[in-house]
Image 1 (cartoon, one colour):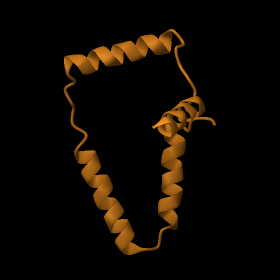
Image 2 (tube, helix red, strand yellow):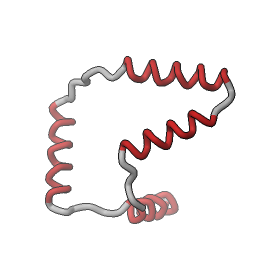
Image 3 (cartoon, rainbow, N blue to C red):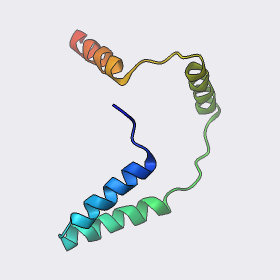
Length: 82
């Protein structure tokens, strides 16, 4: 599945919002969007978090990746083994 771009996601949301007729739903959605945009402050990462992100970047650069489908399969196998 092709990953959606930010513009595609935004446009899809706009289309969906334009089709909503329920005023209470729109007011609630407005509150969610307003509160989430005001909470977008900078978060200071711990030393350990920075190390993990650097390790992830190296894995990506080295091609050490698996597909979401493979990850889902692993998770299911792990859950079934419990």
